[in-house]
Structures are given as C-alpha cells and as structure tokens.
Length: 164
Image (cartoon, rainbow, N blue to C red; front, top):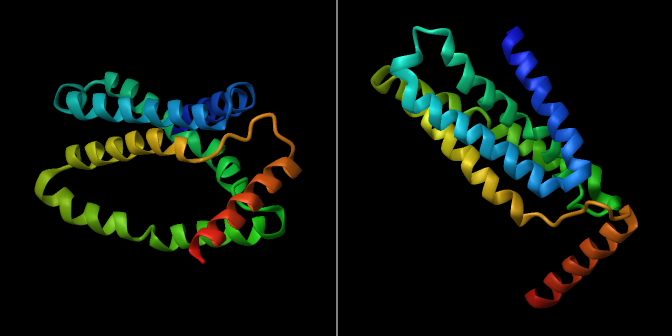
C-alpha cells in the first residue's frame, strides 16, 4: 500500500504541476500514456518479473500515470457552464460510479480462466484510449471562467440550432 501511495502522490504532483504549465489535455494525455506503457510493459514481462522486485518498475509507471484523475476532474468539470457545473459534474460522475460495478464482474470471469495478464492488457488499452480521448475536450488553460462559460453556452446554442 505504501508503494501505491508513493507512486500515486508522484503522479498527482506531476499532473498538478504540468496541468497549469502545459495545459490539461496534454497532461491527461501523457499521464494516461504513461499508465498505458507501464501496463503494456507489465503485461509483456509478467512471467519474468513476477518473482522479482523488478516488477515494481512497471507498476510504478502504471500508478504514476493512473493519477491523471487529478487533471480529469478539472478538465471535465469545465465542460459545464457555471450555472449547472455542480449538477452536471456530480450527475455524470455518479452515473460513472454506478456503472463501476461492471469491471469487477468481468474480471471475476476472466481471472479464473486466463489469470491477471489479460486484465492488465485491457487496463493498458483503456489508458491508451484515454490518452487519445483527452483531446476531445477543449483546452481551458489560461482562460477566465467567464470566457469558458461563454464558449460553452455558444456551443450549446449552436447545437440546439442544429437540432431544430
């Protein structure tokens, strides 16, 4: 647990620092890519490293990168206008939490037959997809909250106009 906590703190500190310097999308993208690479290395070396302490190296990168959540929360919440930000963010996150019961059910079916390796590979693939998906969000670095709100409202109005 100590190892997970230390690598998580390292990832959170790196993510928090670079989010303000480089932007939220690039930070989320490289953190997710770091986790994906750590997962791929872990998958590829599982049999060889399982009985050595070297297995901690890919785990370290996996856990450092998985702390992109420090960036995701801010990036995600800024997609909602201020008037509905709390409701929109909380609702979306609670729906996600509600659906979080599904992966353990899938894991329980995969593990007895195939072991941990495919589970690690699926996780690495999901982090890889997140690294790409980060670019779907608009960049908000250096923008005032009122400017972000105006852009979000304009996009929503344009979308409603397209639907009519």
